[in-house]
Amino acid sequence: MQIGIYGSDTTDSAAKIIKKILDDAEIESFTITAKSKVKQADCILVLGGDKGVRNYFHRSFDSTTPVLGISEGESSGFLAQVDLREFPSYVRILKKQNYTVEEVPRLGVKIDGKNVYPVLNDVAVFSSKSAMLMEHTLRVNDEEVWHDNSDGIIVSTPIGSSAYSMSAGGPMLFQDSGVFEIISVNSLDITRRPIIVSNKSSIQISDISARLHCEVVLDGLDRYKVNNIVECTQFLPPAKIIRL
Image 1: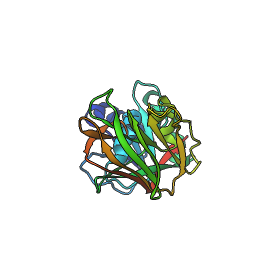
Image 2: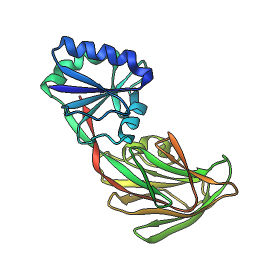
Image 3: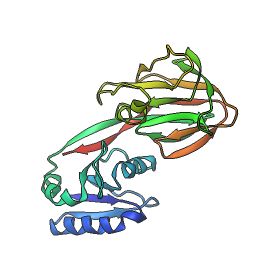
């Protein structure tokens, strides 16, 4: 069995701890950096909690290899469910591959016609300055759904529905529901409600404008300036997350 270990500079000490635990269990392992090519592995251990897992899948790694997210000194999340201190108790399960693999949907994103990395949680479009209205048009499968003035708009996957979109009034989605949700945040139209669309849908946010420039926020991590249009579609293959 071969296991890859992925982390950042801030997780070097944790990576050494995990490698020693795997060595003691006679499991072959190797480390992965942001610049390295992934070798063939049975699974990848990703350090850094939910943020580390998102960063891993934002890279151009092979997403067909299942990933186990590990948190360090923080509460477990939806993507990283194993705490570093508890990891030794899970080694036997990993060695026997006695776990399930959940396929987590991802969103492919284009900003003004240019592809960026796929996201696990959500795509948010807002004015670059808070508390400033943004105008936009939403189309699903080339059909106009609304033209709105609001604080912004969020497109969320099922796993992202428990994050930013929920705080903005969106519902929680079952992970295997096969849908995405779209929320107009604090719309001036008091009748505006979140909508649920098939994950086979093509989602287009266009005619984007505000007094200052607008930005696309991917998984709450990176910001990109947008001039006019954001397109979201299902990205394949899905991410594979190990559940113990």
